[in-house]
Image (cartoon, rainbow, N blue to C red; front, side, top):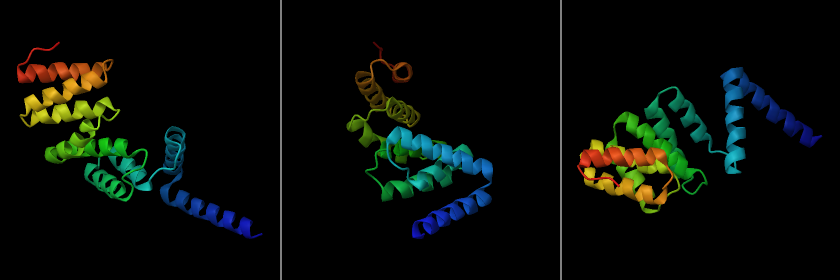
Length: 167
């Protein structure tokens, strides 16, 4: 009897959320949580789901707030590196290039397993006028990911901006 009451309370809360969000938003969140559990084998941080919604609706400042708050609460979560990359994309949209460099340069030193980190960091460094550093970042990325076409193209463009020959 007690367990049934707990379950019914849970479903009442779910129904209240569904009425609050509307059925399409609730279904979207449920699918997002299910795909998250399938990929990461753990439950998501709810602030990251809110941040993903904000990013999709192009409110990047609010998305960056949610990513920051969740990363401070769960810095060692299995998906923290992906959340940092998403935060970097939000900061890129907001024009906060110094924060992006600080956020992603530690990931490059640790050789994180995402070529997008090297691409975004190289792009930001070129826009800041630091073409030599961008060249070393993208060349290191090409060493780590030799089969990444996007990274190779980014490396060629960085080389063209920095005036160095590419190999």
